[in-house]
Length: 182
Image 1: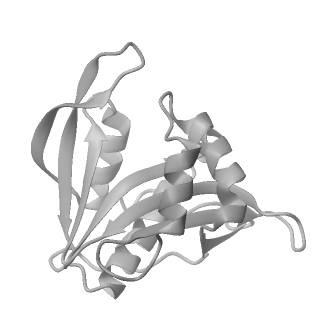
Image 2: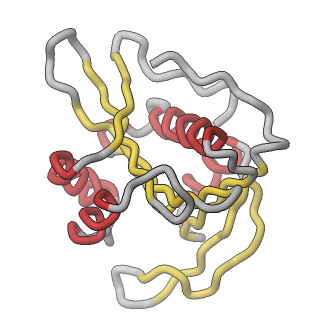
């Protein structure tokens, strides 16, 4: 996201937490609202159980919004990443449609970059549907570069296949951006 993207509205408090089994229902509701072909409950459940801080383990981070002190928090978005040796692979990033265009994707990406750096990752990888130009532009503005095309990678709602754009960010070369206040 560019420097011109305004931060999420300051009257709302944003926090992050690691996902646990108790968050599964909220994650599934968001996943189903965000994607025409959502991941399954079993996939999320297995990934949440396999979280850890070692290479080959998953990390699921949730972005919460609280509009008033003592009010319930709303799940705005999340990311699912796989930790590797000197790299992190972003497997899924979702922002609830009600929270899109408000800077939440930028917050999630910045948190992911910070998390990757804490694990000494040098590169951050992802795939995105070729037809998802809006998200491709978000990733490009954030500093990801297109590396390759994976042909027929994603299923479509019509039963066909769609190409994926493989993108990478070199964290060692990327400009260090200050994490926004949450």
